[in-house]
Length: 613
View 1 (tube, rainbow, N blue to C red):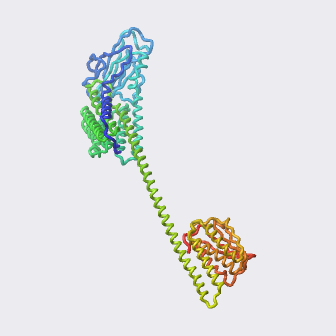
View 2: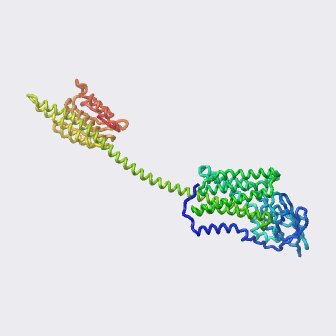
């Protein structure tokens, strides 16, 4: 997934991106939680930690460092006074609390409202609301006893100010309900799963692109670890919770790999090795020292924060040098993760005041930016494909035009070559045929007693043959009717001088393709020879020539005469020569007697062969 090359960003774009990143970093300090509109505010409590001494504390309250590491329980006792017993339901709102909270009022259990800790681990901070059971309150002093239990880790406990009120407080307190419900985390997990599925689909089709591989690896690994880490595991698997902190460096080195792949940089081998090597080393050290310890957890978090800052600097540098707002946008979750990681360390150790750990809330923003990045990359890829297709279409049109021009030139050259070959063949045919007639004329004229009639007949045969050749020179494909029309015109004049009646009909003759001058000459010579035989051996006084349709689209040329209807001693009067000429055209001839004379049938195929002698 090579980055889109765009113009370098201007100062306005740089400042807007910087302002957005800084605003998100400082949002927890700038934007305070809205205070519920309660009837009673409780901001003092008596605090005791793990059966220690009681001390009076102000709310909000953070556990002291003496809470140490591992499972711990703290107790808060809060007193408030009522002048009369309320008639409406009473609720107690805790806007921010870390770890598992339960409580009683005047010895009766407080009922948690609107919270199911399936998708939410309260150790990162949550909001709680309790409903006071009917009859639990009394006029005068009422005592609330809250138990805050840390089940694992080193995150200090936190308890905010308590607000007591009726139904109106519950309806207006949207902020606490948003942080106290499991829906926001469930929605984040669902969104994360959708992103992972989309990345699997994209990676399966773009395996050669390393950026999609790193995106898939980071999102899938984060999903696999985040779901059990941010939810309440069954008791049998609860011991795994402290070890999840050692997975943080893996995600951060994946972020480095992703930032380098997205910006077109080669990912070094040490980054790939650190993805598994660093968490594995921390787990082995923890196992060798008797389990997770605060120092190891701090080391894992510090490595992760440094790696996230590194990924942010890589993408920021690429954004400033190459452009591409999606690359700059990708730097925001890297910087936010690192910044909130630092803040959460301070909150967890009690150095920074705050009820919530915000690192977990960066994950939905990261997934959103990843989706934007994917859509941007897909749009860029589709634009590239469209431009490539348009270029290919233009080049293809150019090549088609060039090929069409070359094809036309080649067709013209081939047609000219074929026509030239046909002319050469016709010239040879003319030479051979006309030479024979001229030799006969010369031989007859040199006789002592020359037969004028024979000389005239030989000269006319030579002239007819010459005319057949000349008229065949310009005959093209499917021009058989034109060649036959020219033949009819000459034949009518010839037969009229001889007193022979001609009947002609070509209306039913089907179309014949592949006609060349040589084909036309052969066909006309066959007809001429059939007419000559009818005049010579008939002798005929009436000749009928017609065209008919035969089987399989064949064309039939039929010549009928009223001459003699028996074969002479010549066995067909040169019929063998006519058969050979017809066979070279792909057809055949047949001579049959009729009751009035003879019928000559010449069958032509619908498509003539390429060459005919």
